[in-house]
Image 1 (cartoon, rainbow, N blue to C red):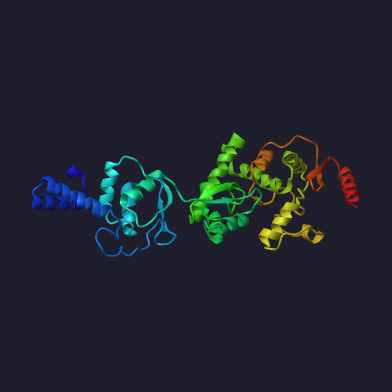
Image 2 (image 1 turned 30 degrees about the vertical axis):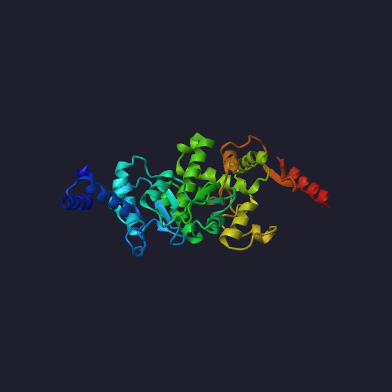
Length: 365
């Protein structure tokens, strides 16, 4: 066993063996050394705990309850080194001995440690794997800015950091997204993150979830070119902001595809609202006026035919499925006719569309 011990311990044990002559005295001395090094830094030797210095992966909480991150693929020895640097254990050498003789593995994650704690207690916590996680729900149809507000409110990361990560070129290129941000490519879902957590890893987790769900919805997404997939994601983001009742989502997608097929404008109110709220930074309008739908901006589908330059929301499963599998109809128009139920009237001609609008207004009066 002696050859496998760290050099510092071999020297220590060699000196003890020479001085004490082996036998029971040596055993007792080694036990005492183990108890000493296993004890929290403020215990077993008198004196205060060594001052903590900033150590990567050690954040948050009071000194008695720091957050400690075990990184994916990190060795037990590297964990021990950071624990020692942070003043949470006395010696990484004793930590290495524990790791060599205990074959259970540390689990990656973020943990709130209860300090003071012995090395064996800390190791047991990291092996058990009970992480500190914060819940955050990103609703379907949220935009990047709204998602940023949700994660900041949950204390996971700052909104500005989240938006910067969502616009990071390395992240965007790694997912082959042909846009300036990850708008539309982060899946709206309930997540559990450590708090705090790096913004880049939050964005990547949401992007990984998005592409996993996308593959489940339609396997063709795995082989599409980035540009082809992007067109479907843009349409899904519009459908997400337009539909109210799930069984109408595919019909709406079919209407938009029919309009594009004949080079008719999409005329989606949701794209105008996106300009007003996300680009101009104004409050969400209660209704749109002629001046709104005449805004000269590439995202305005009343002014410019075809799809806008990028997604306008984070689409969920219903909208994504609708964009991949649109209803096969001749409809070119739809109009909300039941506000309470969220139902729309679909029609093939402009005349029928106008008549439906007149009946809706009459019914309300």
